[in-house]
Structures are given as structure tokens and as C-alpha cells.
Length: 290
Length: 166
Image (cartoon, rainbow over the protein chains, first blue to last red):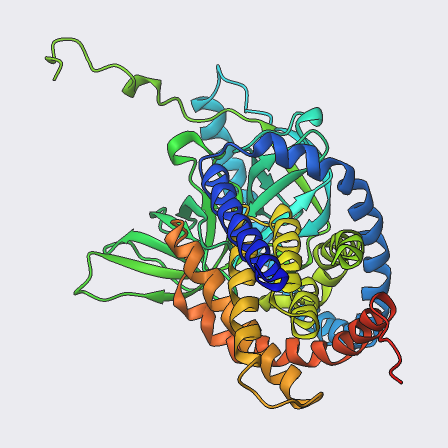
């Protein structure tokens, strides 16, 4: 047998083995069987990424500096006008808030307001794929972070923990394709489901009842439905409403409250009081079991 | 081949960390520059399908480690893309400037489409609309391939020096 043929055969076999391995990895990871391996591999890299990110911040500031100054001047003018408007609005809201506070205190007299426990985390990495929107933070299971926990930024809700290792965790952002969060509009109180749009696409609040009066500028909050996320975390603002009488529901495009491309610090909510849905665990008495 | 593997492991790991942390600041809406992918494609153009596939496998695993994508997705897409362009290269005339750029264009586009297809098959509901960014993404990465290819060509000459004839 020619030595070249043997070499070629070995190479073909190696490539086939590698393809087979990738398929095995794909299957294992899709079924959640590789989490411990991820933790083992990612842990030593977390500190390296933290260092690299810190250097990147400094370089990015140099590159974006001059543009930001011009932008900042324009924003100052806009913000000054906005401050006056907000001060008037604030006075009105304070009055409404004091009324609301009375009702709320009456309603929740016996129950103290739930106090969320938060863990502050630094963003040390971002998703390497152009198809996904996720970040990596420098806190993990050693700090009490666990998959499913909600994550918020300084201005609002940003996503949830997808995978956690002892020293780091991966956060699925609300703009990711596979993200869906139960939300509520501030003005109409209409409930809906917020779907992430993925790369370059806006988030869509769907399943809003047709009769609900959702308008541009409405603030959207988490509704707390399902108990996975705490209620009343700011998610974003309605930028466009898509309504057709031919459809069963209307949709709204949502701009996130937080600049998700520029996140540096986030809070992981490690403990919150979710809605009690245990009543659905067992059927009421008298109803025959299927 | 062994010599290139000693280089591939640390090089691709460092590139992945840089891509996930440092370069993420410059990506914006279309994500960070896929430096590791460009390096793999350039190496495959230089060294052929076998080494290209090995580098693709390693780079893919590292990239998926920092991604929401299931492990193996990027490896599979990149390996197939690399093997296709190496086969394609055999039918193209020799040209040290145009052919590498052409092959990078084809490989990068193929990689993105295959990656998307695999993710959809794996059950991820990613819309096709993302492909509207494909021309811009490809163009940016082909530009990135110019210095990358030159650097890797130098590296290849160091790892595999040509014997003098005569």
C-alpha cells in the first residue's frame, strides 16, 4: 500500500472522528450534560478575561472620546429641556405616589415589601457568536448565583442567568433571540410577552390584547407572571405599536432601558418574593382526577 | 503538523479571550469581530484541509465556551466551511493575492450560513433576517483577513521553512 494512501486515510478518519465529536458535544450540551465541563474550563479563564476587559475599557475610551464629547454637548441641551419637563411631572407623581402609598400600605399592611437580595457583578466577556446576545460576569455559584436568576443593570432589567460556574456566569440578555419575558405596559396595564429580536433587530412585546391602549412612550415593566422574575423591574420603552384588527393580538416594539451593548456592571437578584402559584399544583377538592 | 498544533492551542485560546473581552467593545449590533474564525480560514488556505479542519475544531470549541451556542456548533460549521473552500481551491488558478481573499469571502459566508442552519436544527429560533448583515460582516472580515493572512504566512514560513534547491 502506498504511504500517501495510508496518510490520506488517517487524515480522513481523523476529520470524521472530529465531526463525530462535535455532534456528540452538540447533543450533550443541548441536553444540559456539559455544564460541569464548562465550569471546569471557564473558571481559569475568568480572571484573564477580567484583566483583558479592563484594558479594553481604557482603549475603548480613547477611541470613543472625541465623538462622545460632541454627543454629550448635544445631549446636555436636550437633557436640560427634559429636566424642566420632568420636574413638573415629578411634582405630579409625588402627589399620586403619596396616594398610592396609602393604598399600598393599607393593602400590604401585614406584609413587608419584598426586599431583593443582589450580587454586584462585573461584565468580563461577551458572546463570541454573532447570532446570540449574552454576556459573561465575574460572579458564579460561589457567590450564590444560579441559573434562572434575574439580572438588572443600573437602568433596568437586562436578562437572566443561563449557566453558572463557581467563578463566572453567562447571562442571556433580553435582546437575545431565545429570550422571552412576561411584561406589562405602565399606562394600559396590558400584559404581554417580550421576545428578544437578536442581532440588530428590536425587541417585540407580543400577545397584547387588541383592546389595550398601548402607545409610543409607554414604559414596560416585568409583570412577574409565572414567578420567574420579580414584578415591576423596568424593561424598556414602547417605540412603535403594530395593531391590526385582523390579528388576535397587537404588538409593540420595545427599546431596552439599558444600553445592552455597553454594560459594565450588573446586579444579579439572588432572592426575591415571586408570585405564589403553588395553588395550581393540586386541583381543588371535589374535582375528579383525570 | 505537530508543530502547527503546538501553536494552534495557545494562539486560538488567546484569540478567543481577546474576541470575547477586548474586541467585544468594537462590535456593536453585529457582534465582535470573529478574529479566531478569520485565522482558521487563513490557515486552511495556507496549509490545506487537514490542518484547517483541526484548527477549526479547536477554535470552534474555544468560541462556544464563551457563547450561548451549544458546544460543537461553531466547530462543525467552521470545519465544513474550511473543507469546502480547500476543495474549491484545487479548481482555482494560483494567485497569492486574489484567491485567498476570494476563498475567505466564500468561507466566511458559508460558515455563518452553516452556523445559523445548525443552530436552527438544534432548536434555536433565530430568524433569517440576521442574514441581511451577511454582506457587511463578510466585507469587514475579509478586510481583517488581509493582515491576518500576511501574519500567518510569516508564521507558516517560520514553522515550515522551505528547503533550498540546487
